[in-house]
Image 1: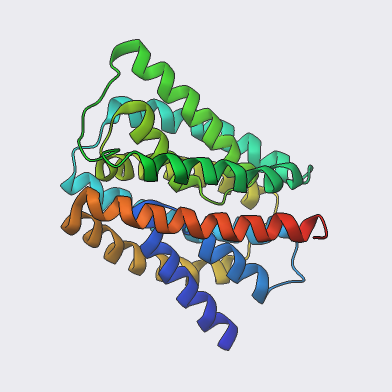
Image 2: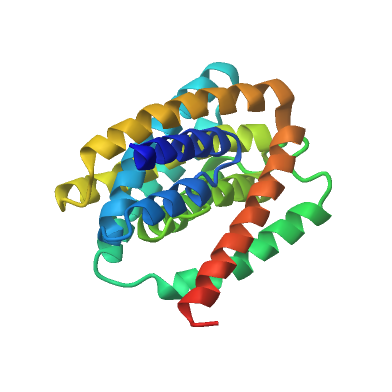
Length: 256
């Protein structure tokens, strides 16, 4: 029961953080792996996806009610992410993700440095693409992030927000809203494979899902209340945490 309570707290916190800037996996994945060290990694990742899809769905609905979602970008990105996330989930059950684990901290450092140096990044919503160009960019980004999410996962929401801000000219709040749409597609697609292949702990997943939704509702209210400036600051905090966590994992894996 203590372990379940700990996972519930972790899921609630992950839902709150993920609803604002993504990166909920930074909290939830280490928690579930530490509590259930004897379970197969694919099963723990599947259970994480099951809980996360409820949190991201709740956040997506809340954002759609209050923020104008750029569906011309979010829809094609979500469609591409849905297809490639399934492929990534299939791959992770057969191929170790060691290379991605090693490379990830370097990519995150680049994202953090770029965001920190560009003080006005994401402050104003000024889309820079339209028509076919917008669609092609959205499909490319959705496909790449979708595969990454199904294959490995940590930081998916944060990567989406950064890419929507950097390549589409969104402000951080609009980027977070669009990212939730794509995140739902990623989670649902990967969950289809994990569920089909039996890599899922249903009872634990349901408990964590309830906690995720609670955290997600609070997180979206905070983001909507405080705006893009608040989202940008929390984004930098979460990315910094992701850098430390993924660097530690990578160095541990190679025996440093």
